[in-house]
Length: 148
Image (cartoon, helix red, strand yellow):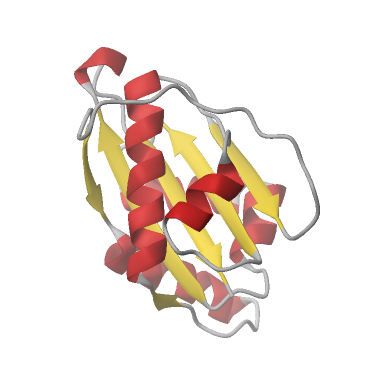
């Protein structure tokens, strides 16, 4: 499963996720590994490379942990999560679950028009993370955050 969310400006209603215990799911930042794959794809399409960003990586890790703890994909509270992690707008988010490796999730996003559009967008920074939680069968949940 994969899903995406893009937020540029304007008002929108957002659903709040229930509060989760700190460290409810184990996770790790995988921006470095994803960055080389995403930049190779961007280069093949004539786009400039992205750089790793710690605020975006924190936002991605926070989202991946939320997804793993809930066992479902959701872009709920996108704007609030980005603001809380210091992510400037415009920003975009790609999420997915089930892919076993960084390479497989990046390939899944490339294969999806909306996710591909986010990865080729006018962004210059990137953060990517994965998380697993026993409550959701230790299935990998992925989050990518892009920002200008």
